[in-house]
Image 1 (cartoon, one colour):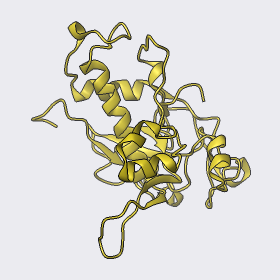
Image 2 (cartoon, rainbow, N blue to C red):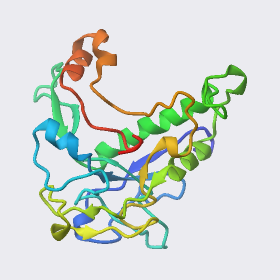
Image 3 (tube, helix red, strand yellow):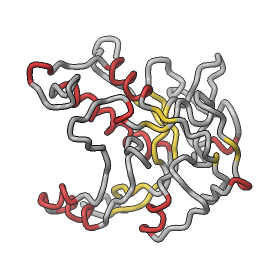
Length: 239
C-alpha cells in the first residue's frame, strides 16, 4: 500500500493458537496490515443454527486463533471477528458450477468479515457521513488506508471477560484459557464495534442478517438468503 495509500491490507492471523503464544506467522506480522484473529458468535447464533458450542459467546476467542505477540513485541493479532461456523460457498469435485454452501472455521473466515467492515468504514467517509452521521456530499472524501485502520482499531471493545476456548468449541471457563485485558496477545485490541467511534444519525448498526437484501438477485444469492446466514459481523453493537 506504499504506492496506493487508500489500500487497506488485512491478513488472517493463522490457526495455530492451540500451540501457544507467538504463533502468528508472516505475513500477519506485517507492521502496516491488520492482523485478524477468530472470535466466537453470540449465544443465540448457536441456538438458531442448531449447532453445539458449550458456553459460547461473542466475548470468546476460538481455540485455534493464533496468538501473539510478535518476536519484536508488537501486538498481533490486532482485532477479532467471528471465525467459527461461518457459512461460505462450497466447491465441487469436478469444478462445475454450484450454489452449494458449507460451514467453515478459521481466521481466514474471520478476515473477510472484517474486510467487509473496513469497506463499510471506507464508504462512510466516501459518501460523506462524517462528521454529521448523515450522508452529505460536500463532506465526502476518499480516506487513506491508515484512517480506515485507525477507525477499526479504535472501535475495538475489550473482551477480557471471555475465554480462549478449549478444543471442540468448548468455551466453558474450566476448559479454556483466560483472556487478559486489551491490548493482549490473544484478543489484540478487542472485538470491533463501529458505532463506538462513528456517528450514525439514524442509530443503525452494521450486521449480516437473514440476507433478504440479496434475495431479489436470484440464483446463488437467493439460496444464501434462504439459508439464513445468522452470524453477526464483529462490528455489531450492543451484543
